[in-house]
Image (cartoon, rainbow, N blue to C red):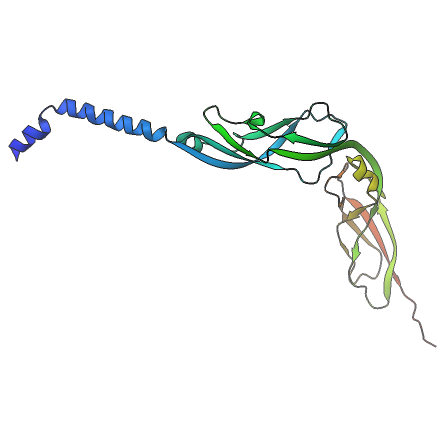
Length: 224
């Protein structure tokens, strides 16, 4: 056994260790350089939108990017490393079609963009507009026997909305969160937020409004 150890293990031990280290390093280098692919869905960023313009499309597309590169780099991808960027430049109202290619994709230098889906997308633009609209309270609930809904006062009675001009012009009234008056028999005051049901319209001042609900007694009918 000792003779076997001396002949096959200790003989040229240094050279064997160097060979082992070189082989291990080569294997690690090859393993690290293995090519891999991954598909990532990312948002499309819009840059240089004119201040007086709004995106009028309700659905904003997302891009699926297929990337190829060293496996170690694929595993290190973090949110924000990959994104699509569209320069709107001199925008104008109306609908526009944009190409989406590897040129619009930002990614780490050692990764290659293999495919972008969709390759084109369509989106609409409109001028930004603002105006005041009335606030419509949403009263729900069951009144106590002999009582009915009376006058409703909203303070302030209007709010300012902002958004694409066509949407703002067509919008009629903001709505409050539900106001439950079940069982009320006198005046009741509620504080609620008013919101715009159109997702492209924003409430300029999101402060809550004050709603005063008058509950009145209904005189009996049909009696003698």
